Image 1 (cartoon, rainbow over the protein chains, first blue to last red):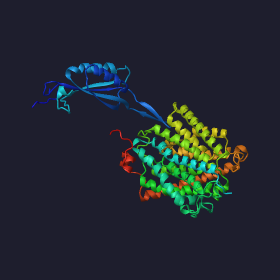
Image 2: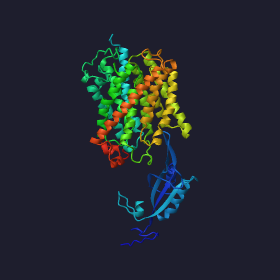
Image 3: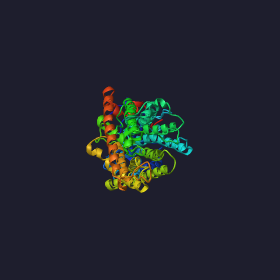
Length: 131
Length: 411
């Protein structure tokens, strides 16, 4: 059995000996199509998208109902999740950052996590062959 | 004498159908303003009220309201179960339409009035308590007040106060009841701390549009004939709604810097409320002035709840109580007998007495409705409890009271 350790290095390379990463990108919703198209061009075959709310340095907005003002802190964003082999991480991050950027506060963030395994449900293929 | 006029009859039946449509329209108006977890609970209250009150009206409400008078206070039980109410006109009411049609038309008013109150206790009332309250209120508060103001022999009618389509009977009675309900039931958990905002303003605007449309039946139909008077009421109603929309939006634009969709819809409704007692007694330009003022005044009135700390969730007090009172008193100022021989002149046309009569009618309806509603609610609270539990208030009325979900976002 392979030992697990808790350092930040890639570990537990999987049965094929290939290390993977999960990339989460939180972006402005209107940028989604652009980012998706750019990811296609660097070879990404699939991804998952969730609608989320959050805030960072970008402030929320004010809503008014019958004269009463409400400060809404949460801002709608889109989260993209992709799992890729390590060699692809730099391209993917670069492409997301270039296309999702507007230069205004609230452009979002990209996070990278280690991924220990991947399985294609239909065929049972694992790791690199499942991506 | 007593011959049916087919034009009047057709018009009254269509008007009755228009007023019927206002209750589900009200349901949508309110439904869009509550949080998503309470949308069905809110819709259900109005929709079910129409059904419940209709059945009671037919059995006993109509005779209590319009039956032969007893002491100026109540109709008797002569027409219990619509006994004696048939296809021939009743000479005392609407001499050219079948008595059944008059009864049905009035029944639509009886149905929507308790539905108006639901906006005050939105998002926190047990459905069982709501059913009992609505049933009792329609018989103990609505029917007597309708008798006083519209019944032959009713003391307010005899006094000479004017209420064309229900400023006192519908709006002030429900508005005062709403204030009583708010004080008895208490605030929603999290009121003024959590953000509680409308979940579906398109639904609310749709409801407001249906109310405006239906109000033509509510006001013009109250002429009880098809002709010049109905035409006057139709026009004053429309002008008041339009002017009030402008009045509210102007006031809010000046105060908050933004004109809102909810404000436009609410303003129109406020104008419709205000014109209700006046529609067949005042002229078009008077309606314009009344509407604009009502829109602005009601906008300011709805902010009173923040100042005084009462949770009138959907502003029944700010719109119906204030708007209805404004309209009823304005009738005392703006009425012209030349427009409607059954009316009178108001203060502006040389007759100060009418305003005094309006004030008496308004005060009597406010006091009676407020006190009676408070008593009814306290008794129901003691027996079965009025509010949902804290946990059910968190979960929402839809699931806790009805085991339903309003919107299903997944398959």
